[in-house]
Amino acid sequence: MQEQLKQALDFSNYQHTFSIQKKLLKERTESKLTYGYSGGIFYINQTLLTFVDMLCQKGRTSSVVLLDNNQNPILIKDLETFKDEIFSRYFEVTNEYFEQYDKIKKSRSVEKLLDL
Amino acid sequence: MKKGIVIYAHNNRSIDYALMAIISGGLAKKNLNLPVSLITDDSTVDWLKQSGKYDIACDVFEKILIVEKPKTNNQRFLHDGDAKITIPFVNTNRNSVWDLTPYDKTLLIDSDFLILSDNLNKFWDLDVDLAIGESINDIYNSKRLGYLDKYVSETGVKLYWATTVMFTKNENTKLFFDTVNYVKENYQYFGDVFRYDTRQYRNDIAFSIAKHLLDGFVETNIGRLPPVLSTLDRDILVSVDNNSLKFLINYRLDNNYCAASLSDVDVHIMNKQSIIRQSEKLLEMI
Image 1 (cartoon, rainbow over the protein chains, first blue to last red):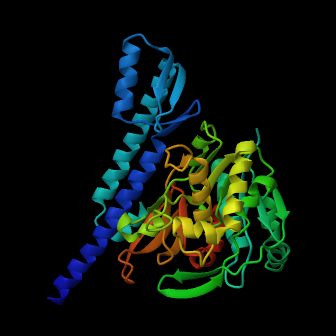
Image 2 (cartoon, chains in turn purple, cyan):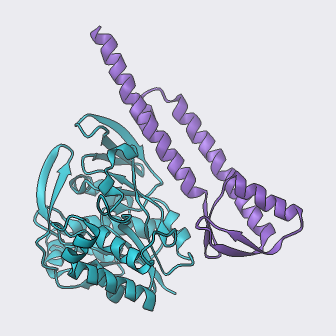
Image 3 (cartoon, helix red, strand yellow):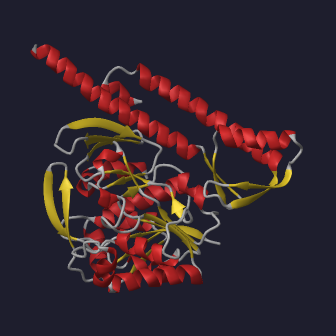
């Protein structure tokens, strides 16, 4: 029984560390997906990517006003360049997120989690 | 416009804020690639010289500005894991940063805020004159926080965290810092109005009240820096290696600990003694 209890407590400790490491990885990813442009702050997510892509497809590529995170209007002079930057940032950051998350998932001890 | 970072450090008998400022300043300089200046006092500089850290300070800081040490009756109760101490808290002169900063655009940070990423560089061009850390973000989860970590009182306004303050030096921000000073000088009166505890002066409260007044007595989304990721004073920084900080997290605040490690994100470490204990390793990171 003592051994089972010790195993349960070890697992409990592991779970706490696991959830903190997941949270920190998410924080890091979110801050890397925050993008300052022309006096505004944009969070790069699927909504922004889709909206910007749709505007480009419609031919609205110069002097477009977008609302930033704080709902302030920001003038984007060249939307194609903006789109390229947010797409490349999004994939770079989410790929890194995936790799790091995968490492966390596969680390089955507190020591391994801390060494990542 | 010249950008830079400013840190205040006034030592007391228990905490070497100057050493913390060297660490914090060194990391900010390295990761944001910007100059850093220190605002301090004669006795703190004397201690820097005695402790052999003055040369490092001269390397880290572009300018070391000496001011009179503010007189304070502020006492603060601090944990160091499960140990506790009461210390005098010398922090009542932050509003002077507008006059003292050598920069056109300034990021004011606390000496226990360690910048390990370039995230804050995104906010320099924000289309506002002044921005403050919008809230605290507990490293474990928000259940460890109380109402008074989010609001100035049970019936008061939103609490901003003056751990990070970014401003452009102009007439608007002069008005802001003058208002902070006004709140400070009338702390009891504003305590009656906003119902906060007046026994201890808190910059976070004075800055929050000033922001509330100048925002037109309403809560706005304007002028916010990212939430301040924080470890509490009951958590312990236990080791530093390979640019990674390892903590024991007092996750239920009952002295049961779990481990966590952190790199590449900015962090506010409220357990100041644990920063001092790890100072040699932290100095290697700058």
